[in-house]
Length: 453
Image 1 (cartoon, rainbow, N blue to C red):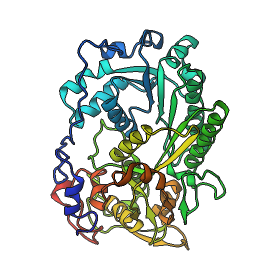
Image 2 (cartoon, helix red, strand yellow):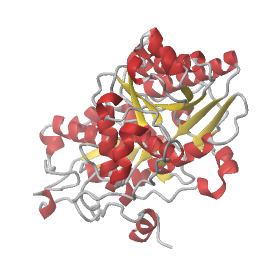
Image 3 (cartoon, rainbow, N blue to C red):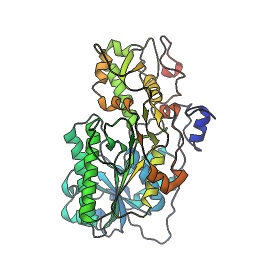
């Protein structure tokens, strides 16, 4: 059997129509399954992009009961939308006011990922877009529009939030904590008593770096690696308090680090590994001659000349949990179909096999390019590049993690189908760079490959 990340393993990961990783051209992944219209059934959403962006009081009139989704234009939210459209005739998209045309961005995602034209043509009919501000009471809506929205919402998926690992706590609380509070306010206001599906993160486990993190655990004993983790922890506390107060069931979904092998595209949302690629690129540029030595400005992974060495605090036996975003969305929607317990049901949506830290380090080295030495602690004066990377502890802290996320509940409910294909180095590279994976780390001297020109 080939090791994870080899070409044989990539063939098992690649579905028909997946992008060809050996080509710089964009190709579509598998088509989205089309849910046909029901003849004679009245539409329950605006019939054009313009009407889909109507004022809430207009867009919500005479609407059928629907599922409402926040964060629908995000990395995970788009995949959740795709899965939910497989089983729901129409959906309500709670879009962030002033963030641009949500319907256009959703449509463009489906076009780029190979959806049939008939499917994308129906999106204005199947989606109603309501512009909201999650940071404000009543989602920033008028009292009447808020009431209309509440009383036509049969279920709520809260996927919106900030994943800024370097953000400050007040700003993250405004988005992740207050946003959750106001989504729960919507659920409480509805006479339909909609079930809430709250997307959290497995990293509410905080800075505990060893052992097993269980699904029923929620405490801050070990502290947190960054303000993002704390904000998501505080949001979960809100969810638990709300469930107890109202006697309502809530599904809490805790994904690990979500990844994709779709090549980067300017019209697709960013994701955690692309954020890391940007941080590395900016740090190398800011470090000046030391950081720029050996770096071609044309593409990630292009090597010219010698590459700097960087000491990063980490553990060579560490591991990270990385999960394909498409699989995460599938698991989440399937879990939502299970009968709730009546309280808060929490599930770790994680990969059954962790990625070794050395594999992740190999990805970082190729992105630089630079050579990384994992060290228990750094002594002496840091280099210019090391000093810059120290400004991003939210990225580097996880290199020392050796803990495991328990997902017994998920496996008990879904069985073998809860398992996902292995995530290897070539898979990770496909999601951050347009070209093939470099054969090895940064060489001491090299001429730029033709693809870097």
